[in-house]
Length: 386
Image 1 (cartoon, rainbow, N blue to C red):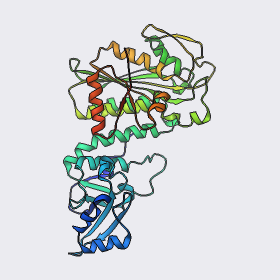
Image 2: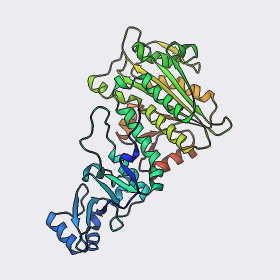
Image 3: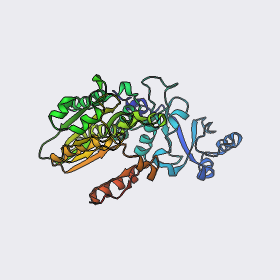
Image 4: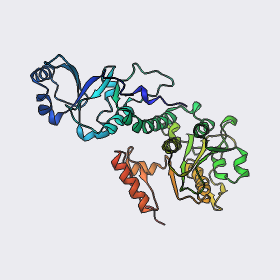
């Protein structure tokens, strides 16, 4: 799957042909508009524009007839101040104008790019987005981040018939091919042969072309700091024999969201060429219903040697992850980061927009929390007692 190129939304500064975009915070409306002259003030008054978020207004300056675009925003929104503009503004190229609210260039460009995203595999957008013109250094700075976010969204948005276990593993393989990394994959019975019984148990009921698997990418020098990324890849979750309700099952194509995040982050790290030894582990399964589905009451011996009794087959995520994390631990890395849509209790505790962070190292937790605050993508640390 190839994400939409960043150049569709962010144009490198190759010429001066761009519409001046003046950001207007409603709380600073009078001062901003007064500096633009009487003609602009009169036009704003006539159109009832006061810098409200969600509104924009094309105006012409009195001196020389320059046409500019006023766009309402809230300075406090930071990264998200420009997010609605790519589809709100008329088509064309725009350049941030210093006469308006000043937002750090890379932050503005990333917000613009994230707001411009549309999933277009099956239905094309009604119109191209407006483009933001930035200098090449800014474009290079935000390009990899935006494309990683696009890839995450594309993987999650794909319907299950086009994002099964084999498709998810193919995304890992494509990343390995792109960066010259090593790739290995265990499929079906090979999982049992190499002692990944819980991954096999969860996915064994799926159709022949959707067999459970574990995809692994590795890259970098063996003596470099070793980072392992793990992502839960349940491509669809029916709940197994303890079947979900229709409402509970409707959006379960997203149960591979952890895998999507891990894959995209691995790509971002590889693009950055950091001096690390990187391993990516993606257990990819479909928790389906058939005659050989795993059953409540079964006891499974895990890779770590612990026996687990199945109470509810809809608690499959921890099973998929336990063998994967056991294998990750065997590699003796310096850091393991695990991403998962796990569990419903986290959503009850923190709501739909705030991810739960569990961590057994304070220094790592502090770094992740600080990064979340800095990037306006916050986390909330939950207790994890040893």
